[in-house]
Structure formats: C-alpha cells, structure tokens
Length: 355
Ligand SMILES: NC(=O)c1ccc[n+]([C@@H]2O[C@H](COP(=O)([O-])OP(=O)(O)OC[C@H]3O[C@@H](n4cnc5c(N)ncnc54)[C@H](O)[C@@H]3O)[C@@H](O)[C@H]2O)c1
Ligand SMILES: O=C(O)C(=O)C[C@]1(C(=O)O)C=C[C@@H](O)C=C1
Image (cartoon, rainbow, N blue to C red; front, side, top):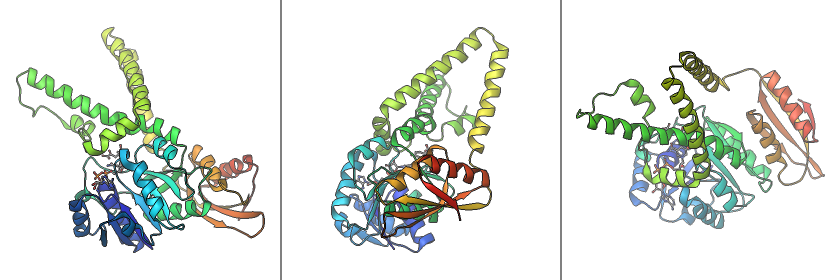
C-alpha cells in the first residue's frame, strides 16, 4: 500500500508514522517547506520525500492532504488532477463546509480526526495520536462507495473510529467543542496577564486549573487563523451563546442567588460526565447485510444515517454484483445499537438481514 501525505506537519506526520508502523505502508511526502520534508524523513514519518505533488501521489492508494484549512481547496483539487482513478483523496481539515462545497469529486471524501495537540510540526508527530479517536468523514451523494469503504478501513486500521457526518453539523458542533475552547483559552490568558500586571505582580500566581483550561492558548497561528476564519459564522453564534450564559451566571452572582449557582454547578458536573462518558459502551459485534441498489451515493446515505444517530460502523464490506443490486455488510458493536441500526437502514427503504 502506498500513502501520499501532502503537508507533513503534526497531523500529516502522525498519519505517516501510523501508516508506516501499523500498516507497513510505503509513505511518500510532499510539503512546500523543504525543512518540514527533511524533518519528516529524519523522524521516520515518510520514507520518500518528493519535490513535487505529482511525484508524491504517483501510484498512491491514498492521498491525505494535511495542510492548513485556507489552502485545502486548491491543494485537494491539484491532488485530484495528478492522481490516478483508484487513489482515494481525503483531507484532515478542522472545518468541513468550505472544502466539501469546493470539491465535488467521487474520489474525494472530507475527513477530520478529532485528535491533535497545541504544538506544530512533524517534530511533535506521534504514531498513536489517533488511537481511539473519532475521525469524522463527510461523504456525499457523489462519493464512490468503494472509495469510502477503503478509507473507512484505512482509518480503523490506524486505530481511530470513523464517523460520517454532514459538513454543516460538523462545523456547528466543532465551533462549541473545539474552536470556542481555543478562543476562551486565549481570552483567559489575556485577562490573567492584564490583571497580574495591573497588580504589579510577576506571573507565577497561576495554579493547575488555569494551566488545564489554557493548555491550547496561542496554538499554532499558521493553522488556527484559517480555522477561525473558515468557521467564523458558527463560532460567532457559539460566542453569543457563551455571552448569554455568562450573563446569567453574572446575574446570579450579583444577586447572591446561592441556590441558582449550586444548581448551575451541579448541572455542569452532570453534563461533563455525560459528554465524556458517551461512546464508552462496548459489546459484541453484530453483522448486518444490506441489499442496496447499484447507484452512486448509497453507501454515503447509509453511513450518514447511522452517523446522525451516533452509531459507529466498526467495519464495512462492499459486495457489488453485476445485477441491479449489491450487498453492504456493516459490523456494529452492541445488540441494542445493532437493532437501532437495522431500523435506520430499513427507514431508508432498504432490505436488511442479520448475518
Ligand atoms: N493541530 C491539531 O490539533 C489538528 C487536529 C486535527 C486536524 N488538524 C488539521 O490538520 C491540518 C494541519 O495542521 P497541523 O496541526 O498538522 O499543522 P502543521 O503546521 O504542523 O503542519 C502543516 C503543514 O502543512 C504544510 N503546508 C502549508 N501549505 C501547504 C500547501 N500549500 N501544500 C502542502 N502543504 C502545505 C506546512 O509547511 C506544514 O508542514 C489543518 O488543516 C488542521 O486544521 C489539526
Ligand atoms: O488536543 C489539542 O490540543 C487540540 O487542540 C486538538 C483539537 C481539539 O480542539 O480537540 C484541535 C483541533 C482539531 O481540529 C481537533 C482536535
């Protein structure tokens, strides 16, 4: 298997390391920064540094574009233009609406691993960065089913959990669970710095909680400027929501509403537990066999229906036939969840049986 990594920084480098170590893949790399390319080779994230995109993607089974969000559209289009018909092209950008609107191609599937760090560059890359992480995929009706299946398997084999999602939903959710926390970390640091300097003190007066909630402050500007700009509308809405919540707490504090404050704090503890414990449910894996018409977009339709219900597809297999129908096998963890998946697939008007 050959994997081409385009943009060999923190995320591209981690994909290269994982593909080499876990899949034994041959990994080529392209990056406009000669220094990044050399560092990726030294770090073992790629085996073949390439001075052109064409050379990197030649005969590749997968091309993964891991460049900053603001250049993704152009780079993905270039990769599609110079790669062969069997090459699956994907990206890892943190915002998904723009790229999915810009690129409508059966071989391209938008992606986003929900794993990373506040650091930058291949020097910080890790082969295990994606272990047990959710990896969002944004297939569309144009997506070729066989390419989706291959990408799904590639991601599970490097240790992550693929989950199909609509780009709009993805960006709204990321605004609150990823982009807003980065904004807040920056704001908290700026506020603390101002208060401490106004008090004429040096900066050691910060404790563990401050360090925890500000870990991502000032994360890689080359990447975050593009993320904020590409998701500005959803992020502005999330900030408005935050301001409204702060205003409520402010009111409770100002009026000495101790009961309101206690309820608010208990609610936060419960919400956090629920959010962090979601998806830890295990169970036996069940196989569902779905009879599907041979038409484009059907695999994406199934994946998105399950993704919307937060059902992970542990693995999938496509069994096309020369007739009008083929079979899609889906492996789902947990009896109750498999039953729920069965209903959702039937609701799409498809026949499904347990294998
Ligand atoms: N950092 C994270 O936590 C994280 C997590 C998930 C996804 N992402 C996404 O991954 C992508 C890369 O982020 P990163 O953290 O690895 O950043 P990084 O700065 O470590 O790496 C980006 C690399 O892209 C290269 N690059 C710049 N322009 C390019 C171009 N035109 N063509 C090819 N390569 C180019 C840079 O030289 C650099 O080596 C971004 O789209 C980001 O949204 C980041
Ligand atoms: O762990 C971190 O430092 C991250 O910032 C990772 C993080 C996140 O916000 O969770 C950042 C951006 C990504 O698109 C995905 C993951």
